[in-house]
Length: 502
Image (cartoon, rainbow, N blue to C red; front, side):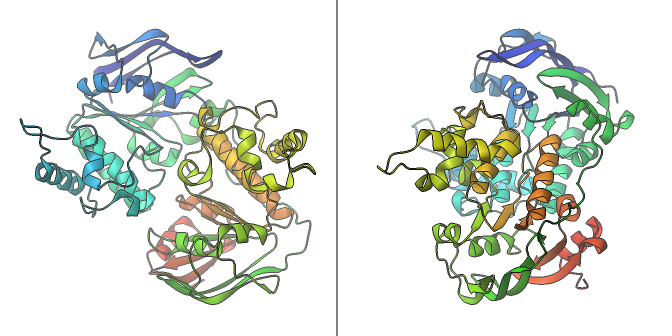
């Protein structure tokens, strides 16, 4: 597909301190195409998107829009040029309504300065209808699920009626149905002539929606290909600089026999239950379900975030009645949450402070002072297997790539030495190379005898990683799929509530 160039990048470079985030990047994006930009975490994708959105300016090179050099000095200037961006990390106000978020800093007012609330509400209804999102414009954002908040973020960008729409991991929190709906919308927008820049780690989806694909590696341009003339293995090789032999590593030999560790009987909490299941040491148990199926509620209940109304939880035969996450941690539980920014990490803290936060009480001198050497040793031990580099302890987490932030989150919880590890979408917003490392870590932890309970917004991860999968529908377990009988199609069928056989 040959389209007239609309965006031209010529020799674009950006440095932060002594680090080159972008190094002489040059390529073109056609008018009215969906152009994917992919690469590992730290490849420069987000930096490039920030330059296009006016958040940062390039140190060298230039950006042209429709043949004219564009000086995008700030986001307001970028919006004037018709550029809207949807970031992976949401920039919304949880205590305000959906309407207020969509029009944040762009409120409609009459000549006397009064806000036109009804007009903004009507516009919100229109854009939500375009997204086929059944959300109330009056709902408080904080009451919505993460996937619903992501749709609000997308609605805010679309309401500005841009010529160029940048989507940075737009569906990292969306389920299969929501992602499919988003792609239908993007195809309609493309047909209207909108230029879409799509950044994602989900290569299957990139190949389903994009016209062309550009690869960045270590801040440098690697090439642009038409989707019709390349393959996923080829793109992965360009992204990481080597072939990726397999997506999901095989199970490792167990170091301890698999005995029943966790027994859940007739659990009820909120709208979920009764639920009964067990899990063994060294087992990776997958939990799958559509948004609202109860998987998140189950994980929160097991970790003491939601009250247990009835039923019982036994770990090695001992009743677990923890009523708070602190008690759960003391009983050997750990929960890696879905959102590392909102629920998992202190973004303005260093790697070291984040990693040792949950076990700081064990790193004190006899005078009650923090033992600096003990902190350094504990941090090194926690992050060594995650390949973060032990010379980076004092780096601020917010400055790290998404993949490295996720590694810090994992290191933080592994530092507590849990017996049962809950993983809620552990590779959300993580590149293909870092995903593979996390998969290998899960296999290693299982081989060492840890019990892992996991879910993912990507069905392929559950299929490829779980030893068996429990499917929830409307708060109840409706199906158990063994690893040797599970396929993506069978899993999605079960998640819809129409498959009951194991």
